[in-house]
Length: 510
Image 1 (cartoon, rainbow, N blue to C red):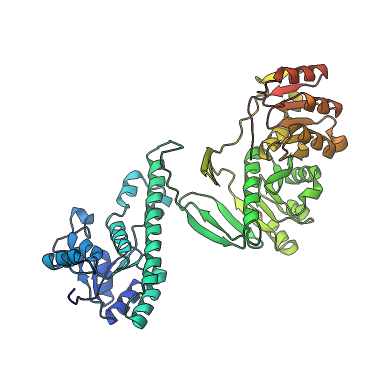
Image 2 (cartoon, rainbow, N blue to C red):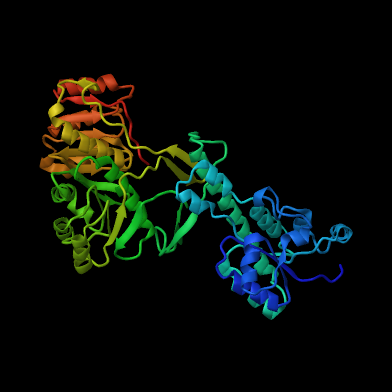
């Protein structure tokens, strides 16, 4: 191959630091080729620039939609320097080789966050830039691709020291570039899917845009590394307002607390989470009474737990809660006075503001066999008026029944919850045997089980759980039904004159 001019193509929307890069490349004897806005900007900085149109011999067309999509440009990027066939075409057609491509894209993500209409979204889909990036990344053995301004110093340093960008660096930059275009396309897909009102929940392919939001201290255990990734355009309404750095386990537990907030959002409510499952849940006249009810359910397990509140945390609630040790509180917000209380009394307590109207209707779980996807909505409300009642219709116990039902729905399966006076008195979760869960819950509640409402997240396979509930003087049972022995279970309830509401809605949570 004949000697050729060292050449860098610069086409960027984000011009942060690009004039410094271009100046250094010029000082290293690189010819700078650019287009429209970037070319004008660099010329204003006194940097010699050659227009893309001069390189390709073709003007910009379609109002600037087509600028860089030309064989003279793409050929100069994609030509393999040790392939005689490629080099013969370069000589035959007079294609100028390009050694460095510096490119970032139209800000589709920022436009999408502003809730732009479909027309504006379409106009901010970058075509030429993505093509330049992919071409340069594909030909990384010979061409350097730079998509991130933080890498400008990396390449100019190596050019100054080594006379070229090392292959190792070119490979890293190529991988980074492909990740950038993959993210860009997945954001476009996600945004247009919503804008075009495509409601297909489980499409044939499912691109997921994710950006790292934070490196976490470690994973579930110190030997595991971890990070938090977020959807770039999803409005998560999340803000840490105080306390220590968030951990992996903090966020898992906080997620469970948010589910509890959503379940209880119609009333002043409190949920206490330990290892992603509730140990106490209550609705009250205010946050303090709800907190006291949730704490009384299992004060031992509550130590070091995660608290979720459905209302803005005020000073009085902060004073009450700060008397004990917790890892994190998540709530719609915190008053200025409450924040001061926590800062003075519990400076390490993590405080998360999270909007209760957040809509998260899809859950993905990675398994050995692949990713499982499911619609992840709140469990259906209990139909107290029209549901199937066995025995007396106890509408007077509706309040406690709701607490028990929601606690069982949030707890890990198999789950049994007992509630009384607007608060849980026991939550048995994660049992492999439902009758064992019933037995544990009753034993844990002790005298408080008398007159309480029992809710189960799954059907009773045998009447043995009913017998236990009867001996504990349970006032009402809620369960979805669906067992082959439903009639035996109903008969046991009638025998013991213990009302039961069959909800016909299983609420497993694994």
